[in-house]
Amino acid sequence: MPLSWAFFASILLALAGYLLGRSRALAAAGSDIRQLHSRPIYHGAMVGLSALLPALLVIILASFLRMTGAIPAEAGPVIGLIALGAAVAGLGWAVTRIETGYQARNMVERIVMGLLILCSLIAIATTAGIVLSMLFESGRFFQMYDWTRFFFGTEWTPRFQGNSELGILPLLWGTLYISLIALLVSVPIGLYAAIYMSEYAGKRLRSIAKPAIEILAGIPTIVYGLFALVTVGPMLRDYFAQPMGLGNSGSSVLTAGLVMGIMLIPFVSSLSDDIINAVPQSLRDGALGLGSTQSETIRKVVLPAALPGIVGAVLLAASRAIGETMIVVLGAGAAARMGLNPFEAMTTITVKIVSQLTGDSDFNSPETLVAFALGLTLFVITLGLNVVALYIVRKYREQYE
Image 1 (cartoon, rainbow, N blue to C red):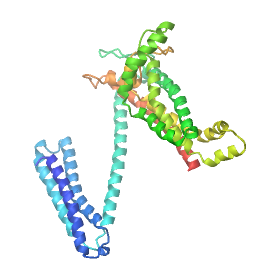
Image 2 (image 1 turned 180 degrees about the vertical axis):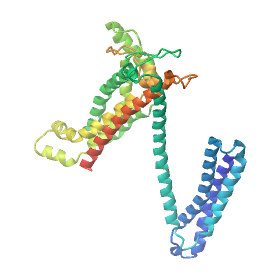
Image 3 (image 1 turned 90 degrees about the vertical axis):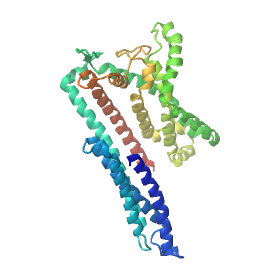
Image 4 (image 1 turned 45 degrees about the horizontal axis):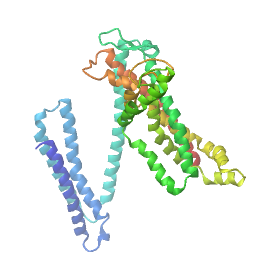
């Protein structure tokens, strides 16, 4: 039996086991259901889980052994039969346990707790695996390429024939420059929108405006990239760059920064709105009672009280901007350079990671392995921003919750 068939058969057995366990529990209780230690649904859930979990364990274990080569791929039908047998055995064992004093609820809660712990461990192990793989491949890169040339080099010219210059500074400059423009666009607009929605707008307008702004967060980044490529880039080139003699390219830092800033507006506005609303009303009432106007109350009481949370929201938006790829690919170009002209094309770390790993890459060359060093550098930067943001947000919550 193929593993897929065994999997679906186990699910059907679990559903049948749930109905069977529930009906047998009701039958065991007779006319007085209060004689049961646990409600009938827990007995049904216990039987269903007893049928499903052993089969899943067999399938997962067998899949892992097949990936490692410990068992041949032709063993799939046999493993399917074993998984199905485990499901039947688990179902039969659980059905025989049903009686009025059986603590099915406690057993189900223990199993659910175990599954929650397992999911947490999988998430932690996945993160650790990603970091370790990046560290390992970055270590291989630095064995082939001098780390001082990588971290302090100002030229990025990868050549797969050899003699490459792989300095990260032009990419880091492009990443920070575009992210800065994006934040200059998103932070004022998002913050002012949050202040208006939380302090001035009525309930009806707020119920419409806030979801409308948050729609921006649901638009795919490739759509933002096309918007930058087709609309924003040519407009900036025709109306600003060419008349002022600053460039003639539709791909520029300003194009990517503006569009990325639009994308980040809901991140700033939504988080800031929640944080401003969390400021105790007693602070506002006290300021108004002392004769302050509403604008003075906002500037001198509400915003200072909400500042730690707002700073955390801005840092989270910054980490999102640093990791953005598609908008930069379509809006900023691919030129690795260091300059101040916002109408010039530049690129970022994420774009170069994609370009270095695209195609038939040889993972024994520094031109390919540099992608992992770039990724590790980006990971450290965004991790630092997230740690600072979470620290600030946690401190804010401790103050007002």
